[in-house]
Image (cartoon, rainbow, N blue to C red; front, top):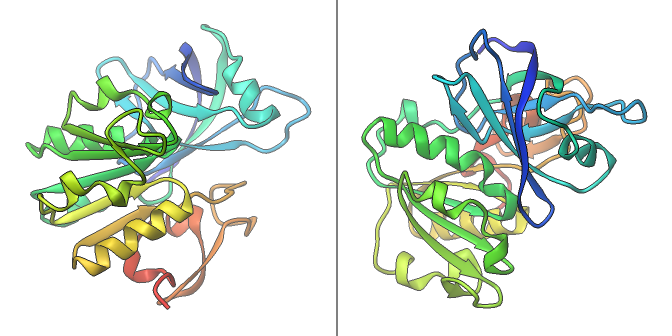
Length: 259
């Protein structure tokens, strides 16, 4: 898929959770085609930060020519992005990487699992699935309810189940502990994004239940094109590969998580 370097205008930038901002960018000339699971490299408006920041594409509105990003503020670079004002211009390279493969497979009953800000690419994926007449099920986890982000928005496209470590919403525990959903429903594919320990737990659950599964890996991706070798993952079929170029989405069968 062709990559574009665009100067986009900030249409909105607001906090939607503890330390998480929703950045909305607009291009009056329209946006290129993208798929759920791909990401962008966003230039940081700070002279002291040289590298762009990789951020999952959260949502697309083609009629308004807007793209949304969920950004967790963890350092100077992301803090600078969170401080962008309406009307500012930011340079973005997109779309990068490979997304979830629902387009090339027959999916009827998908389960989308996210943890923390890892829910970000699952909204765009949910929108795509809904546009094709597929109503997904979302299963999200967090330390508490406040960290389950944008619940109302996800519920526009599918049903939402939650787990929280403190029991403040949904079932208490981790996503793979949600017995009400996982013991009573069946799914033909799982798509997941979040912290690596969560992804590994989901992958083991999927393999145990013979369910196809794809995960979006969270790696440091400095360049986004496979040149800097910051995001190498050792795979079972191809050896060391760059997550930014061959991923960030991988079928779990390619990962060395089951030895």
